[in-house]
Length: 299
Ligand code: GLU
Image (cartoon, rainbow, N blue to C red; front, side):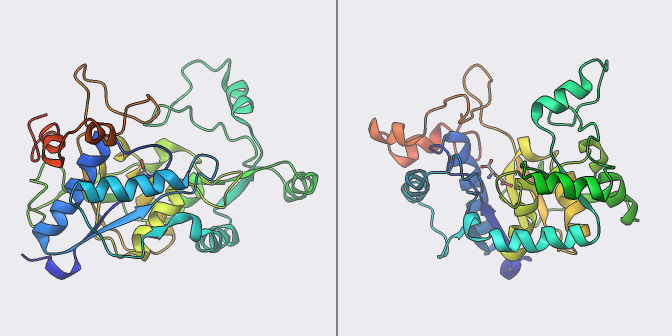
């Protein structure tokens, strides 16, 4: 087992709903990879979304994962306790003029692109930010800040890319047997420009998912990010941020998403029930695992 000591992976749920079978799959996949490599499986609570995160969902995450037979080192990293770390990184990007404040609402953005046929969309399907507020003179920025309307911070993608001389890529372990982390990973090229000027700090919190995830994975010494394929495209943003912030680059394993019988992928937003319901209906942990796709079950 080559990677033994340094192999660290994690499961990083957001406590804004109960864990569904897709989360069970992701957590088990990460834990199995760590076990196979003789490394460490970490849990991290991604609760920057202060409007939606709830303490009973955090408790629920602990209970549900324990019930599945998983354990992890304490204390668990909570993103809500790390806002200062995110602020410091954001300040560094600000000092290098790699981010700029943006007052646009979702409505402003939609209005700006309304009559533009075939306006490009990012790999996740959102319309690209049309550059409003990107080139605002400093005096106007100061004025708007003074007026006190909320703003977010966006990455100046073109400027960021101009600072990175090499072609960006990362190592993907998907397609390798996820339980054999010592097999050769595949190199995947990345094009962060497809995402445009992404938000690095939201209007209500001093970070966004993208900034927090790269800082936390680095702070926890994560050597393999294990997560669902729905986040694979965003790896382009994460690798760019790792370069800009001089952080180590982990390998990635993006696992297939768990789907229901109609082929639709499970999601909290769509109201998919937590697997704790199955437990309450009398199923055992191994019954639940049997519902998952291989290597855990035949689902
Ligand atoms: N917190 C994210 C979620 O619950 C996962 C982030 C990640 O694994 O990078 O979807």
